[in-house]
Image (cartoon, rainbow, N blue to C red; front, side, top):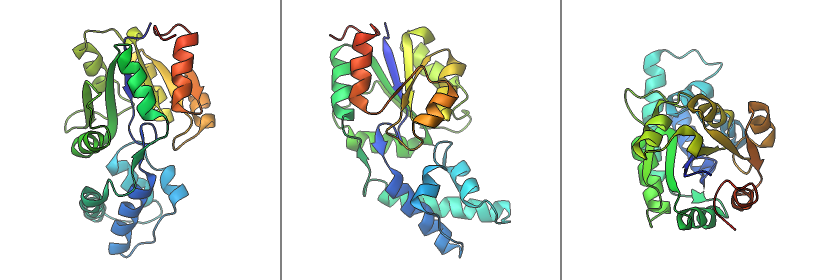
Length: 224
């Protein structure tokens, strides 16, 4: 049985695509560069802000200083607008409540900067259901490196086999594999079922509450 669940944030717990798209395009436009469509940004998210900027600038020969300026503009705008449209996906609150009722340890592990991750979770999940929320921190490698996930698991006094990682992209599936955990794919998120199945997810779900049903029927928790 699982004793803990680690959730990705963007595209898994919350739909943040509109706010991220607006902030990125505000930064690009300020630099005199073409903006990106919502569908383009959907495929750029998942590896942190620096990689998001790199992907958005593909085809443009900007030096390191220029890239850093766009990242600064992006983060400055996002600081003020990260919660304009971002909301939990339908069914997420219910899933979290069910898992808490069963006594599972719950955590959030995101590749976005830690201050953004913690502030968004605090605002959208005010009951504080998560034992730990971590975003990208200086000196700690981002997912799919398993270091941050394993630190969280050890902090709970659990083994990797006791924990599943839920995420919407191949990055999350690879993180779980690298950490020795099962991986539960969130097909409702930014990347879809195809990417998750190709990455080798343990199971893939179209909605959050399907996870609760699977946990019960597969005997992965005590849920009835």
